[in-house]
Length: 206
Image (cartoon, rainbow, N blue to C red; front, side, top):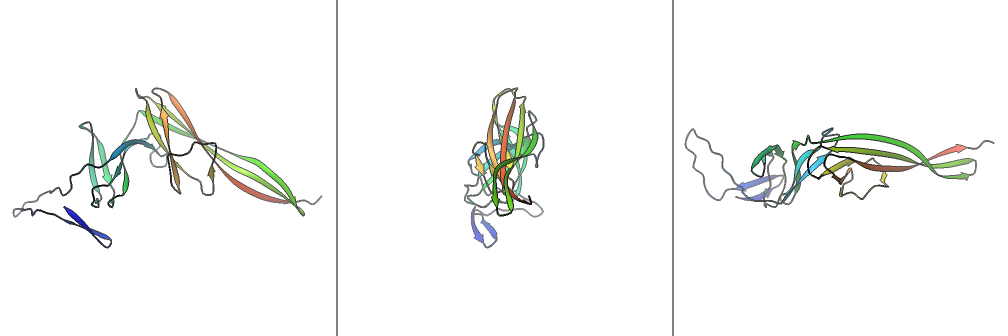
């Protein structure tokens, strides 16, 4: 099939006609093409607590818009799970979660503190500058027999900056992702640290 944009819509043009008998129905494939993909174990505690989700990261290089619909995922010819592909235009990237990886468990521990970084005097006021620091520890325990990599997806706080943390593998305005290598039958701890500079004034009366 070929396709063309029609404003907010997309039209498919099937090259060969299909005959359907009266009272019958037919399911006709209009796209059969390989697209590049990679498999990730993606963890986001807000979407799926305690365990990462096996996901396929795809790029739509078919040249056609993909409609939203169900898909079946096979790994080495074996059934791996079910998923739903979102509406994706040509050239777009998509992440398709299809199964929960029960062999890896994740727990989160959050800590916060205030750290003073500066004091100055302006007229009758004492200006105090502090860092509001947030730390999130991801405790990843693997019961798998092989080394694996977990993609930790962390929501970024508004107005906060990362520090004492490795550069993320990917980053958007709202979240960042890190690849964390996990040894078999061991627990791995990965920490994300964020800070925000805050100021407050106190009047000096005496």
